[in-house]
Image 1: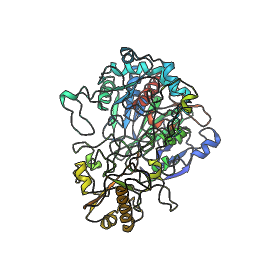
Image 2: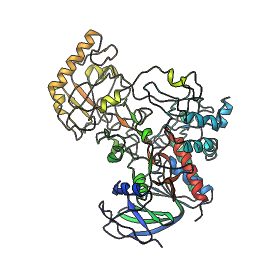
Image 3: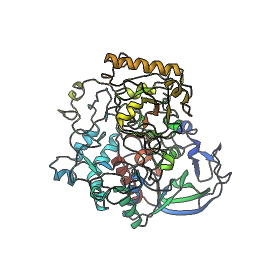
Length: 602
């Protein structure tokens, strides 16, 4: 019988380092305080014990899955199909994670039936070669695949066709019968692999509404695969528990044997006969976790893509670290490629990821508060930092990415793939993160400044529900007044009104001259001169998590000695070592984890 810990319920304080007689427990809230000792020992030699009380209502299953998104549902269904009993814990009051709010794009290759129908020649070996090709170099000099873990990519490549059939078998419908390259991001250069899940008659979580009947088979969104997988899980007896948040992992001398989760103010001890699968998402919403990889990513980057529906709090990662797990994916997290950090194209709202706008009927709109002003033509705005100064060409792009035929001609592994690039760095993000030269990390808020004429040209409605006047959108009759109004928690210094006036005056002179002498914006077109004037939140958006717990090809979590921690698995954005945007990484690792955990002896 597992020992029940005692103390003060839900305390965030870690009291001491202690080993219980047989059970080691660690709170996610203890963060990384035990990691140094674990790393030095190479094993879980010292574990932090939280103050928790009354872990009542024990539950038992063969497998406990933490998280009910793409990875978690893939794991649950795969494990249940293999004959295991499964409990899924979801911290939110709803299922789906980031998968359900995604565009439903899933890269599937290796020779799928859809590829064969299109006459596309692919194979697991070709896919593996693509995703480990050292020679793919982007226009800014970054490399997409060089630092992928070969064992993980081999496992991914080998399961792709099976994953395609798995999704179809469980009711997923594609918007088209053959692959294209829409939404591809680090999916391999050789051939088209992108498939898109039809939303059918499910309501969009983004809008809270179903799409028109005549568009249900052609509109791709996350509900098109999340809800079929949920139905498949429930049909196989999987228990999905909402509002259950991981607090700690239970580890005995034999390995990980369960979790402690919080639910409605109480702690519940849930035992796993065969294993625990961490599928709780990445750590991009946890400021101190993400700053281990990039110190610039301070608290003002507060609109992480997928929030406020699903939160990347690093809880599963931290719980794993505190029972001896190690990390992977440092380069993949910080490399200047893909969509780890993005430039917003919707402004005036906290949650401004380009491909995710919340509608007023969305179940989380009371948290999101605004949809944002979309379709920004950057000739209509200037971007200023928190002291009212421009910092880069507003039309500059975000970091590049690789997908099918981005390099053309292409020979896998050829030195010419790198030699033939035309160097063209895209540094808007780096300039936005650079700060104001005062010794602080973080670039601070970025504001899009525009006037009434820009509003007319864009045909915007500059009022709720499109903008959030509670700190993310400001309006004034003069530029001086606008600068004074910009007060919100992340604006740590006041914007000097004279700076904003001087910046706009100088920019207007560039419009007259037909050239931007400061940052080379192509032929500035419109002056900012007629009030009212506006400042709209346009701060970079954190998106993909590509670092996390180190795993092997069976999705087993590895410790600092490189050995598998018995009974502990990880999948999706909580795992590191594989740099790819989208749902395929999560689904594949979840399926692999579920099958391997189910096959483990109890």
